[in-house]
Image (cartoon, rainbow over the protein chains, first blue to last red):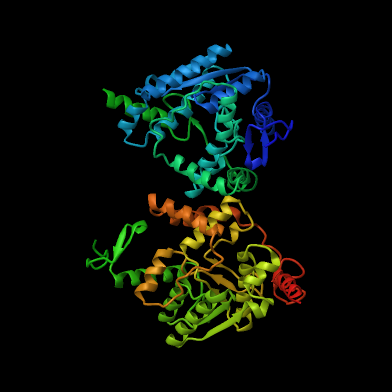
Length: 301
Length: 301
């Protein structure tokens, strides 16, 4: 196989693009996809400081790497979930990456903020751990951005993540979640920062190849709580479909964004208010984060 | 396991309903689901003659069986697809069923109507056989109903069929097909009869159980062209999801019908005209059936 760009020996084949690339041209292709995402959805400008949510995994570190190389003003924010050795290592990968590139990294601890780490949240709420963890992440990322003056948070969600989330929403026709499935979500309230996903055009396999070729040292292990998660089952289904028909994931996500999402966008946005307790945005009186935190702290007494 | 209704030994468990039934109460449950479908979507009245499309398989014969027992004025219409021994046997099953119940059966031959049987259509068009076959079926069912004065055609599509079709439409976001996915499609033109699917609430497994318990002699073999069909791959995906989460198929289809379909319904209906050649409805000048038939007949000369 030859590289589509330079004709030299290819090192990666992208079946859904019906193309192959050598290492250098693949890196170029990858960066172009990120640029195209940023441009098309007006994610952020060169003069805006961007908070990059970094887990220590391949996706978020690959994203940060591209943005740093492009000269964007980035700061990393790592949330320490307190999930045993997995979190210790994840944090160490982020710290090593930031130190090596000379870029600032903020760290926020779920145990401190919520009153207990994710394994305790799991026990107290008796719900799947991903539920309280996701809620805490969304809250702490937004609050972190607000507190440090960032107008936008960028996350490392890739094409596979987005397609799997969409698949789950569609299987249950979660008409609340469907309009929120987008590469860029605008700030609809002064206390809600913009959220963007510059990797949404790139597959998991592609971010892994980028991280490998760029010698990024990331945490390879999956979260120990991820096993059996529905999102993983959905990714497997999509992977099987992708195998028989390359481009299936891309068509599913992009077809939705182009043709179906508009049908689900509500005429009126949901009314957002400020939480009576913490002042962050909520649709109720006291936000879900404060209620979760109360529950965890009560149980810890 | 005990029957939910009578407490006797159950013979079939329906996990998605979290229920089990003895043979008699299952038959009752099955009929009720058909009645509910007819009532809820106003499919047809007692005084309307109904044309039932019968393939010779379990679904359409089970449907016909329920409607006959209920005293509806039904006539069967079998389309002989000319697919080797499979079609010979299918037709024989329909004829034997009609003779045993003393109900009228019409038979229409694709070879005569199109100019060649499905295997020839496949060769001539060089397209997947399901494409020309489906087109011919839709056309001949509608024309048969019009010619014999039936205001409505009932087909044996079950929950699995409908969920698989929806899955395919959603994976490609076929926004043209999505609003047409419904248990009942109204007549939107004088030359287009109503199309209804009274089994849409019942799974394939349930129609098989009904046919078995009612000793209906149906053709068990699948169409020889079905192997490798995308719809079968989609059914397998849905079956795996159903296994880990009973009710998944039901929720997918019913959630769509309740929450998402309205979003896709177009403000304006597509403008239907009469085909310049055969007078049946089409969106163009000459309908797809006439064009197919031309192609097949030309090739046969």
